[in-house]
Length: 305
Image (cartoon, rainbow, N blue to C red):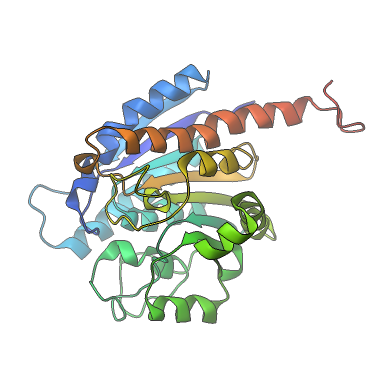
């Protein structure tokens, strides 16, 4: 039986380079819901979380919002639904994956698709932007309380980052010390994206009860997806990434999906939104079809029953 999908909005840009990312969920939610309907999938719109008007205390606001988001994600999972979180800047990951982790009975794995490492702490960050810190926080690297929530909800050996091409030395040192597998763009180009994602999936599901996928839209080349908070030259092709993701989405261990950093203000022609919808469609629609095919296969022969 297919799980119903619940689309949850994390409508803030308080932690990012461009506050316009806060408008991402309002644009993407109806587009994603329409595509899921076309695929014949059961889906519902959950809460969309917004900061208070004229909120100036960014760290406190992000802490509260992540707490609310974590509760919404956990509630969706307890009701048997698959949460699909739409950001907003990547600081929302603190809420998304703490909510999943508190609900999963066992360890959680994570595939993080991003042009950046997002592994600073407040003491090492060059900019002070919270969207550059969530993975470090999730891994328990909290040299200064970042969200005011429980840190260290994911073990480093169950995490990988795919598509990195912009980072600072402090982040690279931290991830190397922790043992997080980082797939730089040079390696992705040398080996091909599908083998890299296959390895990332193996890391996420080995010794875990469930896993999630966090996609920063800036992983895609700016030529295809210019409407992001912090674009970086080079990167993955949108169709290339969608094609690789479709083999992941149908797995029963998938416990959550997150897509962040879409900035409508910078997407005048709508091409970035189309890429975002295609990526989610690959995970949710094509993934559901592959899952159904696997259930129909004869376990003895591998052929369709």
